[in-house]
Image (cartoon, rainbow, N blue to C red; front, side, top):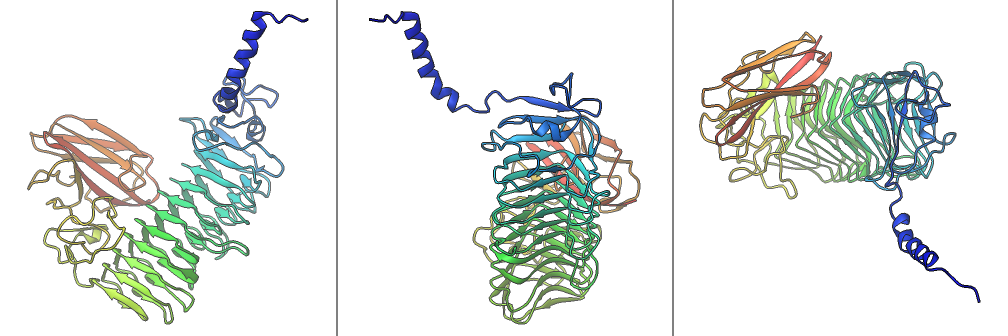
Length: 520
């Protein structure tokens, strides 16, 4: 009879107990790999012995791992059919390929492919973050998603100079992707090339600047075998996407069902917001669309059904404010400010109510500040919209007795700009506008000094400057005293920047948001 020693019994018991834990914590021991222009692909990929190419780096990644890329220009082009790297498990255990924090990384592929061509079914829970994608040397897209890839997030990237669309999503079931805080511009050589072109469903585009693309800014369109349903486009700034004819919509929901565009700013396009062709149940709400060449909002054709256009501000567009084409069925137009357009309304087959086309008393229309002044005839004149609980600023709606008309809900401030607080506002407690530069003005220099002042009762104040509404992606600073100034360099050449001026009193923080247009 063979004897089993107690020590062996203990070892076997330990393995049996530990095995389930090991099996359920895949990715817990995440590894960070590094790539540098001074590295070698024969290195292990540590911070002191980095790899040379991104392609080699992604082959090392497992769920939970991160690949950091150091400053420099790289020529990698990653085709996941040829480079079939692993997938993440969830958003808490993804694969991440990112610019190393604080580094500037440009990807300029020399081949005819996108930087990332994501097609394989195993490509799930992948994060691509912080790169400048320059497609000048390629004859393709910046990113291309197809096949069965799902759950890919592209974040904090600039995508420019692609010969085709900046980002293309297509394929049988490529879906559930997220595009966050992107700068997508100067892509395309024909009217069929767009900033972002999505032919699949359940995707998110948010907090992005999309501008100067040859065709549309954001385009949602059914693929040959897929339906582009239930996409969300929110909090984007979309401008100067224009060619000729009907091409050049800032945001175009041209097919699919249940797509939504809200809290977007659209200007300088051929048309601001469009839904057309085979689209059904599209919804536009809380958007601001102004100074577009022809249409502010366009709903067209007999195959467009069930569109809802609610609580938008439509100002000074070239021909029509809101146009609904003959045969577009069951369109609902409610609670919109439509003012100073060539023709404010061109509506057929439409249920229209509580819209406003007289002077709404904007805070500063010339400076593109479309908040409502105290006493505006648009305050409390809207009708309740089910499921709509916040305005363009994210402030509660309704604030008063009833919904206000337009994208902004008046919050009871006497300020000349957008304000927010964590206490009950009273007269003269909100900060005044910045002294310099004049709010709403056009800035022509990459370096600007912003300054303002407060009363002696203010405890503290702060400036934050960003590319998106209320953001601080560019710069921020804080100081004590009765005045504050900040000099900011590296401002963008075009588009809109947002300057938040905060002040802290004994009753809480208060904020004024200012808008400036860049043109240098």
